[in-house]
Image 1 (cartoon, rainbow, N blue to C red):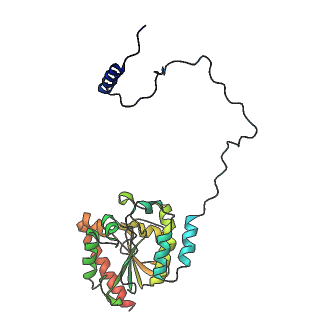
Image 2 (cartoon, rainbow, N blue to C red):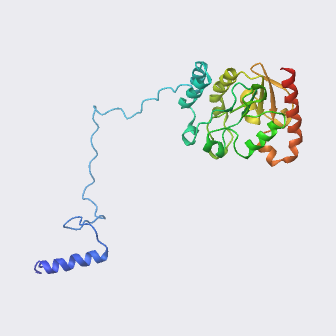
Image 3 (tube, helix red, strand yellow):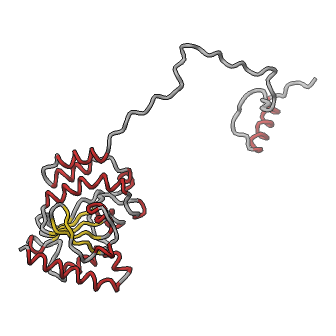
Length: 263
């Protein structure tokens, strides 16, 4: 029978284990993980006192669109409306957005522009229409004497979007997302009370008119909440299709004429 190793032998054996990569001492004896037990363990007998494993049915969720409508109707001012929208948690995409984008321009303006949703630049800065499309929009408005910077309501514009948070990847808002935001948008229009609405692209037309097809709808006056509304192609579309700027210019002249008529 071999005698137990002395401390020097034990030390040498430990150093050899360390060189092999061993780091932790698990136990005095090795464990055979492949060894099967003599008898399988008996299953525990069921007890009458055990709780019912059937999960309880989930409580019915509140309708987020109805909740949005209540919040919107109870907002007496634009500031209160912005706060109500900030607190609304119905939209999951809110969690991935950097900034809440409510509006820009002069709330007293005669012209209110409604876009789709913030893009990357808008999400970063916290204002609508500040990227390349927004810069083109500013030049378009300046051509008919309008500006978001003007303190004079006659020459000012007020700008917002259907969604105040950026959708992931700049995707188009879904019908469910728009349904949640429409009550806020309608209240926004009522509180700002512009003379004319400009619907920039398919998304605001879908949200407020219930239909799309901006290339067919543009240039034709319609009505939203009792106000004249002009559907227009989005400036981002004009950047991709410069030839469409001629039609956009015709729409701008029509808007300018409508402002003169309703002055």
